[in-house]
Length: 131
Image (cartoon, rainbow, N blue to C red; front, top):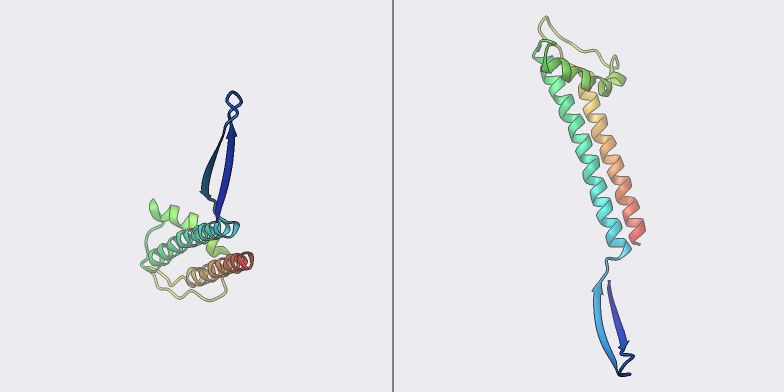
């Protein structure tokens, strides 16, 4: 949105006046809220991406039978809160070295759907404000 201004300055000593014309670009509310919505979308996908990477690493390490020491121990502890609510829904088949962590796969799917839903709500809100 462009704003035009005509400013008149009057010199008190001489009594003469001088007019200046300025033109400024001011972003509209819709443009500002659209930028905020794009940032919010990016933040949501970033958080979901970090969670999904943690869960994918957890899945691969458990599948390959990685020992619960060092890095894997930290990974299992950090990712546990994200899979805890999905434990026991489906059986996790395995052998003596590793197992197929179905709760991690289910958590990845649910968090992706959750991220998609949140971003869709942000986009719907953005469209409603622009209209």
